[in-house]
Length: 132
Image 1 (cartoon, rainbow, N blue to C red):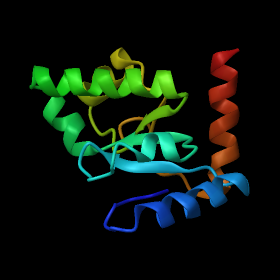
Image 2 (tube, rainbow, N blue to C red):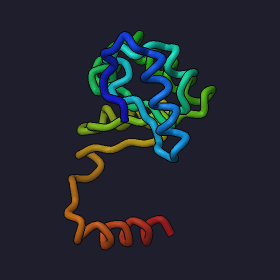
Image 3 (cartoon, one colour):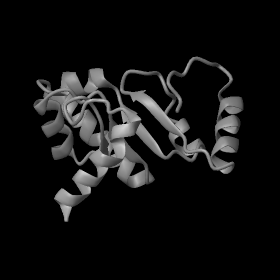
Image 4 (cartoon, rainbow, N blue to C red):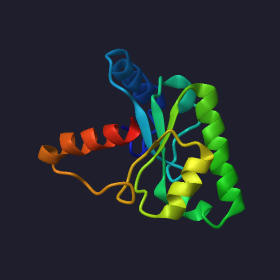
């Protein structure tokens, strides 16, 4: 997961990320919308996902232009075969905005609090039973 872009050595970074992807690592960009990733990165590296910045989601709750920006990111992800993900979902408003948008992966305390590992499989089994 790439968190911040702070380099002038783009080609070296692209190559390192390509090598990681070729070795089977899944590459995702974190905080898209609140970081300074060069657009070229989206076509130079095999990305698995982009994770929307929480600030962009919060701003989009009451700003039409920010919602359109999120919609544009969703379209980019669809065209480039990336997943659009969001974390830090801590309110119904954020959940509704992102599900309406068609976000592929959501996580956060509104959906479920962190679960100790020894309780995880019971929790998963209960979810699976609800779905069937």
